[in-house]
Image (cartoon, rainbow, N blue to C red; front, side):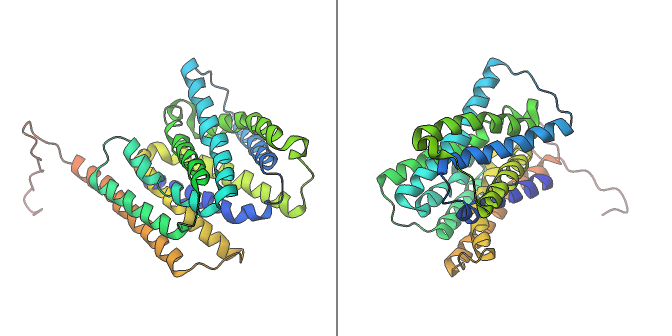
Length: 305
């Protein structure tokens, strides 16, 4: 589980850096930029599969439907919803709504343990405080709710595919499928002006978004998700605002306020509360129980009191 914690932490922190780095490409056509980003990421992931000699795996009809739903909901619709919500209401509203991802995944994962549920609530509170409630409006809220569904689907729709395909193939297949879908969306919304030659800063920004945020975060997240389960893994989505705050500070875009830092602290506390559920479960499973459900301890041998 330790490796899962490290991977999930890194994945969600990297996703949080998206906000700061996106400032480098905000003048580029939005949907065309997304298509370029995923095209670059797909090229890197295909190269990784070839280097690792991972052959194409035949999928059943149900698995193709899951992969298509994962790509459509978790990648394309999510990105479109975030873009549209930001356009009509600013980034604060969608950031706040996405702060509820830990709670949504904890509930969607089944009957959450009380500590996991409590930790999720603390993470949501911290993410909301760090993001800020903002002004917002009804269209922005509706788009933000669509983005929330997309973020939850990004994890839940991948879980049935990971045992057979593994993190690399799931990331590769979904990213490759996302390119034509985003290209079509871009052509419909932006026409032939969806693509142009990027500036040096835009090229560097797209490179970071493709290689680090898409390839790196996808692989880390899909490797950690089966180890932690959706409930515990969802806690780490609260680190997205922490990554955004850190990137803004490093790039001198914004200095975090006391509320940003307090929110980040609450996120960390909530994650620790939620993870104690896993430690307690592992500790309790170390002792077998009798037919009455009573825990049976090993008897201490002489000299080992």
